[in-house]
Image (tube, rainbow, N blue to C red; front, side, top):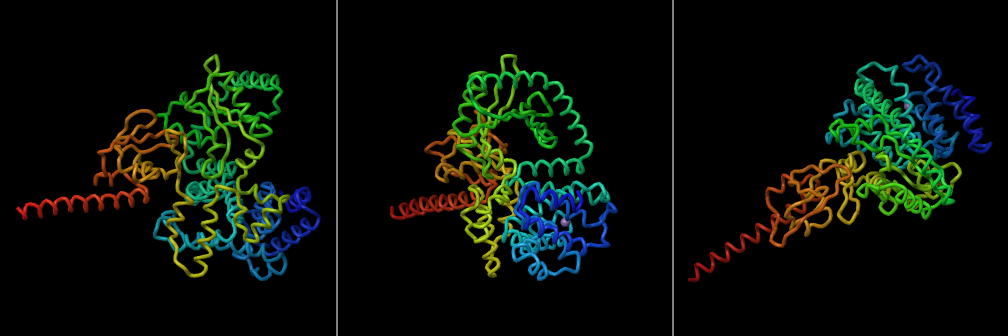
Length: 506
Ligand code: MN
């Protein structure tokens, strides 16, 4: 897309004045970057232009798009922030400054290993930079997406390094912002560069499988459409194919047996409101046999990133297993575009509230952003904060665990059953005598897996043991256990002392 295409695209999204502003920004950026080339040999300006195009495609507000065009000017050209503020206003200058700070913090991190606790300082800078305005994160994601799309022009070692960073930092970030579509794009591209042989293998496995199941699936699709029409339900249906990377991850969990994966294709039904969604679910369960342990109500219990949808897996009379995802238009929008959907160019209401600092206007379940902003404000005033803690919150891989009542808890990957117990209640945890995972007894050393159903068994006589220290990994559980053990040992000490006194009295 060249400058003219982008201006034309912008005209269909924004007002006349905004399009003129965009033209101006493109002019300024083109002049500033003139003479600079990308690794591909193209003029450098192609990169900021594509970043802006991505932001328009995500339907971001005009300030973000302008900042996208200008995002590399302060770092790589003679342009200074004050000029941007004069030309395009405080907001745009603020966003460009944030993006610049993120890249500066990053260039300080030579190796990926520097994301480990040793570079608290760089990470603190990064978090402070992004914490000031969440749109900075979204612009960074657009920047990264375009760099990943053009990664083939980079030398091999750099490709791997950038791909790994994308996989470990930017894809989880997109996930935390519930920007599902972007997360998948970033993961697919990273995977392709990180383990090319596995990417090709998994991709062809997926394609041959899809060819095989397509015909059967089409008949299910027709059957469902007919039934929903008979019931006079308004809906839209499409299919989503599992991404190569998520298939690769899942294959690992089922010992490479693709027959055990039932959601290669999921049929997605979009209904007009929540009542209709539940109605559709009822129709599906009437038509086919539901696999009850696979019904997931993410509407009643949204995922921590705010994702909402009803999922069910059913078996047809011919033995075909199919996953359905049922949701409203709004849920669908939010699942695909996540936080970016909140800055829609048409919905200035939220953007304005956000700019005025009315943080409560942010979508529910994104409280970590609020935490981040509060922390950034505190750090800005020179008060101490724990960057490592926020790194964990932002970037670590989370798993979802179900309680017997069906409540969903999110825990860090690598958690044990006792971590789950302490998460529910430390008094409950203290009386733990055993645990059942998906209905079967497991030892305390069992590492919880995403989607596990966990039941904690208790007994009145059970008490915390020092050996439990080996079976907790979350800091919350460790701290609670430490307190309980010290109380316990104090208790034992009292008994011993008491007995000692009594013996002496004799
Ligand atoms: Mn860039």
